[in-house]
Length: 184
Image (cartoon, rainbow, N blue to C red; front, side, top):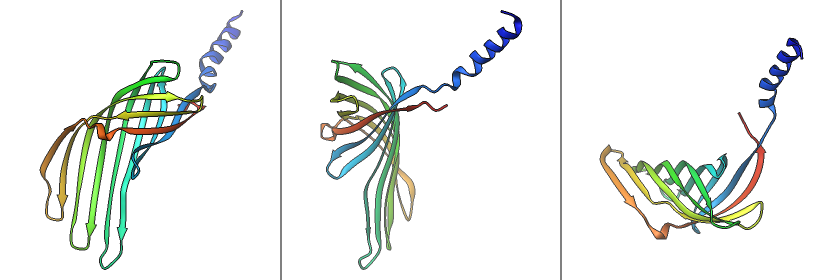
């Protein structure tokens, strides 16, 4: 092999190979903590049995225009790493850290108040794959939260710290698994 062919081969190997697309496992689902409390969850494969998870919840959205205007909502966003350990072929133990932020707001013509905070949770649960495309899991997320309340008159005068592990906060997730080309 002469030098020109070697350089051309090396160039093709270094620069063309990364352009080939590899499929990445992804999952999307709905996480229920009750009939009136649900989150949207998206996961993508990070490495082996590790998944990056993104969870957004918008709950308690209400608007009332009777006599006076009232509006309220709660929203939260969490992002973490979920690790999975095989228990059987279809059952996995899931765990991992999940930090996040949340905001709640209540507005009326007379008064505005709300809460803003951050939290650090640890996901604990089990996932059951009932097919190649669908799974169900049950999980709970013990958390440590730091928040402050605000009103029309003040902001951040009181700081609240809350830690909790509550078995009533178990959540059920129904999710769809799919593959798509990995993005750079």
